[in-house]
Amino acid sequence: MQIKVTHRRIKNLAIAFFILLASAVVGLLLYGITRRIPSTLYFRARQSQSMDLGVPATGEVRAAFQIGQDSSVKAVTVDLSRPVTMQTGQQDRYDMEVRLFGIFPLKKVDIRVIDDQELIPMGNPIGIYLESQGVFVVGIAEFETMDGQKVKPAENLLQAGDYVLAVNGMAVSDKEELMRQIESSEGRPVTITIERNERREDVVVWPVMNQSGQYKAGIWIRDNLQGVGTLTYIDGEGKFGALGHGIADIDTGTIVEVDGGTLYQTEIVNLRRGENGSPGEMTGRIIYDDGYVLGEIRSNSDRGVFGTCNEAGRELAERKAMPIGLKQEIQLGPAKIFCTLEEEVECFEVEITRVRLEHDNVNRGIELKVTDAELLRRTGGIVQGMSGSPIIQNGKIIGAVTHVLINSPERGYGIFIENMLEEGNS
Image (cartoon, rainbow, N blue to C red; front, side, top):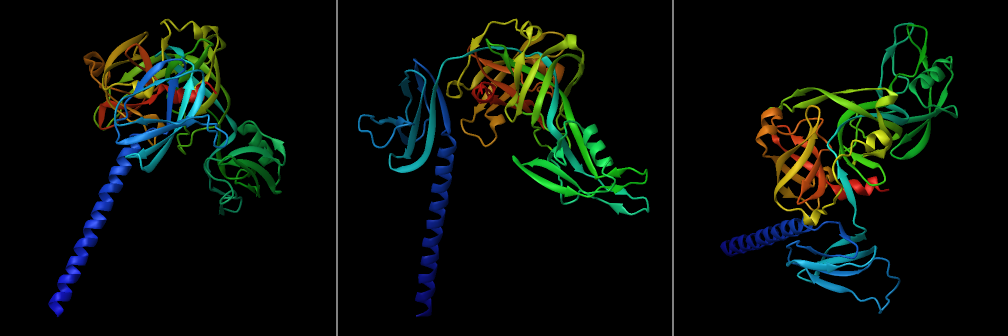
């Protein structure tokens, strides 16, 4: 009797194991399929275009803003395991409900029909000066009082990444003004208005006199940032996009919210070649002079730095405008990048090795490898300062270089141009 029970238990355990294994396999399959389906797809207005997702699923396409169950609006079902051709009309927006084998819901895709757009690919080095929105808190500081005690007045009240907007109701725009407000408190509590995680709140800090006889709150602050990168594009109205990723504070890693900024002409003064484990770098000299201003910066986001060029900036655009290449049009294989290593913009060969239509990191949708022997000789591959170099394939601008693989400097990542334009056109 005991042997029969044991055998039954073994049989039940085996069945449970295979059920768990099958569930895990199905889960991984569904995850893999879902990652191959983008959340957003763009199509050009008034054109016939194809997409090939290659997934065992069907998509039901319907106007996104349909009200109620209007029977006059028909849904169109497409087979996503095969190439699909879509004929678009005017600018519009659609939803596509994706189902596995036409049965199990997988994902909803936002389909946007947009007017075709042409951009002038750049590749010029630029200097970026950003004015932060308020005063940026880098960290909390400890200091000694007149009697030798170590204090942190702002501890648990302020934190790295906060933006100080006002003190006692008076707006502050630079760190000097904030320091004056704190020092003039004479130890009385001050109400500091901050922005944290896109929410405003007031905190009360009691400044303490340091050993020099000055009242301090114990915070490290910064009110501007500078950096060097590459200009990606200029459109017909003079709007520009650069970097392909945001400028973050070096201490906190937080992308800085800006209240304006300036684009400057930059000279490449040094080029350090990249090696495995040690990324290379292009060093530029920013010329902070009115005669070298190229434009005004409007925003700094995870998709790049954006603004409008002045006449001097527009004069840098020497190439003809070219159409954008949407992510579903990108092919594995040869492509080109434009960047400046010395004085002029040069063209170098790369290879697109992978296209991630859906990726958690917007800056890594394109994987690429430098194949140009001259670029490999001079830089070892992709180096810091190349961020923003436009990527060209089949006569279209498809994206911009964003990152390098530290342990393999000939390899890197790029952002889709449509992701940059989502911010640049807003």
